[in-house]
Image (cartoon, rainbow, N blue to C red; front, side):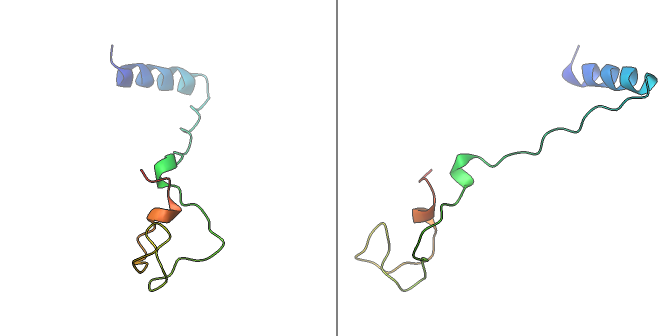
Length: 67
C-alpha cells in the first residue's frame, strides 16, 4: 500500500465521521536560506565584509551561514 492510498483511506474515514484532516504544517526555511541581520547595512560600493580589499557587490554571502 502506498502513502497516497493510506492518505486516501484516512481522508475517507475522517469524512465519514464528519471530521477533516489537519492541514500540513507550513514549511520552515532551511537554515541555509535564512539571512542574518547586521548592524551596518551592506551596500554596493562599501568594503566587502568577507574580503575587505574589494568593494561589496551586494551578494549577501556575509548575511548567510555560508551554505
